[in-house]
Image (cartoon, rainbow, N blue to C red):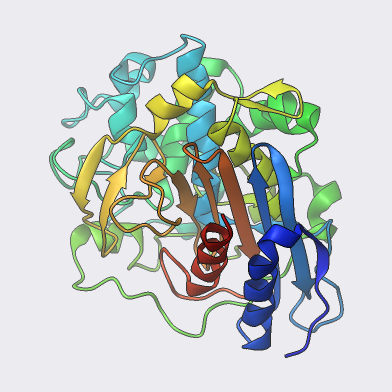
Amino acid sequence: MSVEIHGRCDAAFAGVRQAFEANFAEGLELGARFSLSVEGEMVVDLWAGHADRKLTRPFDARTLTPVYSTTKAVAATMIARLVEQGALAWTQPVAELWPEFGVKGKAAITVEQMLSHQAGLPGFLEPIDPTLWYDPPVIAAMLADLAPLWPPGTASGYHALSVGYLVGELYRRVAGRSLGTALREEIAGPAGLDLWIGLPDSEHDRCAELKPPSRLPQFGEATDPKRAAFLSTWAAPSGRGSADWRRIEIPSGNGHATAEALARFMAALAGDGTVGGVHLLSPAMAAQASAERIRGQDLVLPYEISWGAGFMRNVPDHFFGPGEATFGHSGWGGSCAFADPERRLAGAYVMNRQDAYLIGDPRSRRLVDAVYAAL
C-alpha cells in the first residue's frame, strides 16, 4: 500500500520514518500518527492514511483518535497531581474519601491499590444493563457496593473499564469537579494540548473512525476476573464511537487525542514536569507515581505486569523499549504512550485500524525499536 507520509522527522531518526512507512506498506494501517519528543523537543511527528473506513477523509494533523486504555496514563497523572497538592495520599484508604466504598471487605483498600488494579473490582459478574456504563455516578455506586473478587492487595487483575469509574468518582470527591474538566481547564487548554476526556460536540467531526480487529484477544482460560473485565456481554457499553460515548468522561477508556498531544504530555513526565509553560508534575512526583506497587501474573491480562500507581511499567516485558524506568500505558487496538525519564524521551502512537494485541502491538514496537536504534 503506497501512502503519502506527512509531518516531520529529524534526520537522525530516519529509521523511525522507515518503520512508519513499513507499517503502511505492509497493509497494517488505515490511518496513524507517531510523535516523539527528546529533551523536550519534538523530533518526530508523522501521520498518514485515512480517518475513515471509506477512505474519504485524510488522517491529518487535526485528526483526533480514540485511545482507549492509553487514557489511563493521563488519569494516573491527574491523581498524582492531587497527591502533589496534598489533597490525598497514596496510602490513604479510599473509604476515608468515599465512605460508601468501604463496605464488603473494602475498607482498607488504598488509593494506590485502587490505581494498580489490586481492589478486586474488575467489573460485574452478574448481568447489568450495558447502557448503565453511560452513567458514571451510577456505575461508581454499583462498584462501591460490590465485594472484591479476590483479597485486595494480594494480586493485580486489570480493571479494564471499571477503574475509570472508580478513579473518576475519587477525583470528583477530592477536587470538587470532574477529572476531565480539570484536565481541560488546568492543563490541556492552557498548554495547547489536543487531549480530551469527555469530548465536546464541537470536536466530534475531527474524530477518526475505528476499524475493529478481525480477531479476538487471547486471554487464556476463562476465570471470574476475566469474565467481569472482558468476557461478558455487559462488560462494556455498546455504541462505542457514538456521540454519547465521546461526550461522557471515562478516565480509563474514552480519551481522545492526537499523538503529538500525548507525546508532549508524556515528555513532561520524562523531563522537567512542565508542558507548554504549565506545571504538570514534578520529576520527583512522577517517579513516585510510576514506582512499582505490585508485580506478578495479572489475574485478567495474560502477562506478568509491574504496575505503578495507574501506570503500566516497562519491566519485565519491555514493550516500550529497553528503559528500566520507562512507564506509560497501552490502549485497546494498538495505541500507546510512554515516558523514559532516564533518556528524557517520550512518545505516542495512535491509529484507527485496531488489532487484537492487548499490549505491545507489533506496529508500535517496530516504531519504538527504531527510536532506540537511532539513539
